[in-house]
Image (cartoon, rainbow, N blue to C red; front, side):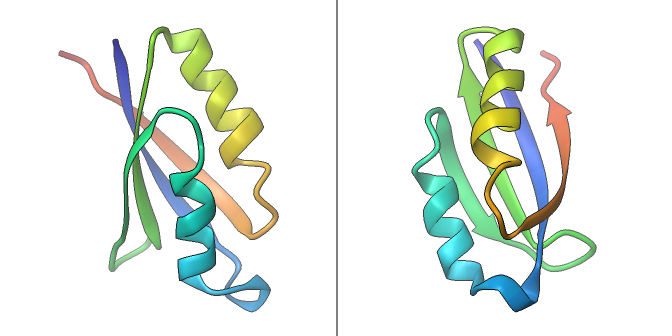
Length: 78
């Protein structure tokens, strides 16, 4: 199983943080979403069967949310 943390910045003028969190919680494989303080606005924990599937989910389902400005993905190495 592949696990990653995705750090998210979103556009404050395009909606509320709770709306973005709600959309992120509906992404397949997402098991944790939380508001954070600092350079990033939200942290997402996501799991997948493979690295390829994980990359596809992040590209197709997370980065395409209109209010998300940027992401940084941290893949867990066990």
